[in-house]
Image 1 (cartoon, rainbow, N blue to C red):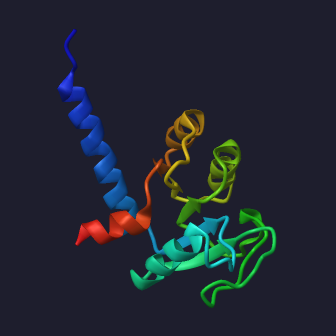
Image 2: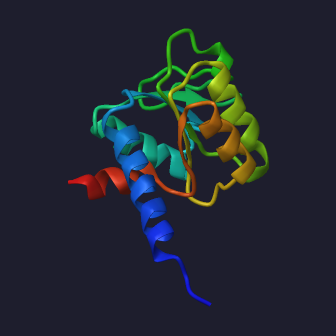
Length: 146
């Protein structure tokens, strides 16, 4: 049985193009769902990297805490200004609903962090015209952009 390397290469190239587009051209306001003031959580460190690269971070967490100097909101719907990218740091079982909320608020892209995969949410989100990345970390990708 042969493997169609043309399709695999095209898929990888397309994903890399989407990653680059989100990080460099989609916009600079990133709502980070699951971001709290807990310094031990990955979201806290990723948010700091995004800020260093010029992104405005918007913490989204039920506690609505201020993180890295930015006021938090309890939900995406509570954010009173446009959001470009929704970065998702929640359990995979909850991630699809967050992607749906991202569409509802008019975000341009959805980013599921490492370990967060929901193929059905990916299909719904991309069919709605949003860019989407799953199972990757923007902090790692930004550092590799050079």
